[in-house]
Length: 510
Image (cartoon, rainbow, N blue to C red):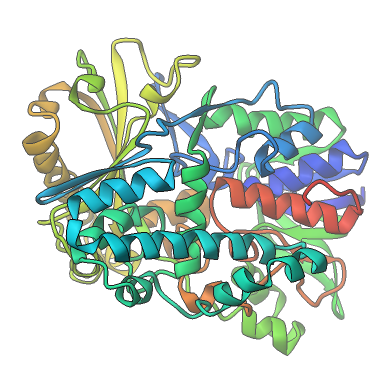
């Protein structure tokens, strides 16, 4: 049966697009190679009682009237899927040698806290934060769909914003002459990008930093409920989400994509799936190679020549008979570095694979909502995240699995040494479960080439006007992915909803 929309991959942007199209009466079919839908948003269970989300930690743009809320309202899910807000007085707790800073939602309070720590730099701190607010306003105006009248009304902010199109975060730190320690405190959420200040696009940092200031959130029923609700909308409207279906070929006539061939990973039988329109949620570069890069226009070929983002190391842990709230964990995330210069910390870990002075994030999802458990009542989940090099881990895995396992254990132990020294003195005594994931884990379970965590790397080169979008140049074929939109929970909602809006004419996003 030929459907209206065949979607390859079930990441969040695909589920949002599919749910909106199914809800509007279109015939939708989604093919997912993994056993669970959701991509990096999927949830998995270990030891039959501990549930972990693959990659998501906290999210933004979920408040009333914002992107996620508007999509959920369109689907009739806004009462079912709700969110808990992180502490506005400190949604990110930054810790480094000699300094701490709780990042507040209020910009004036942030300036006050930074100025208290660095009194000789009060003026530059004020100017930097003011510039961040101006650029954020300009980026909002420049976000598709661009409104010409609004563009003219905010021309000054837009002009200033465009000046930073090729700037890294480090470039702007240097421009305003912020002290190194202030730079580190402001950029310590670098694991959210897996890039250090001297590589990270200033635009990418501004968008995320200010968006979390406007509201950092966590789903009341955990992320699994969000994925399940979107899948249910598709099913309830006659659509299908088929897992364990690995796409091995695209059906192309001249420059028209008619469907795909997929192999059932259980039966090993290959089937053809056809549709009026094919939506590509899998990595666009990977899909283009399968189709034949020469079939795409020169412009799209150039846009497909992006660098993949770095990958990450994750440790999913469970503690028992201890309350992490007694150790300054709660409705916030904690970021820690042993090295004051984040550029050097990144190089040490990513290039030299040396984690003796780690910089990492700590999340405690159990403490973020009381409405649903992710583990038994006498337990709490704590997770650790940092950067890791795919090529290095792939080589270890191929040459000696024992060394691969030892390296993962080594990284976790180096992180736990810091945690015991500075946060929870006896955390190892309370650990009842731990499992680690490397870049090759990302590739295996989420089908991301080179284990990338965010699609294309969030550098100025990849964040500029030449960035890939939904247009593929092939007929009946559109991209809908982190590399053709933007990575993260809210941006993937935006990517899926915006493509729905473009193809249906139904306006959700202003």
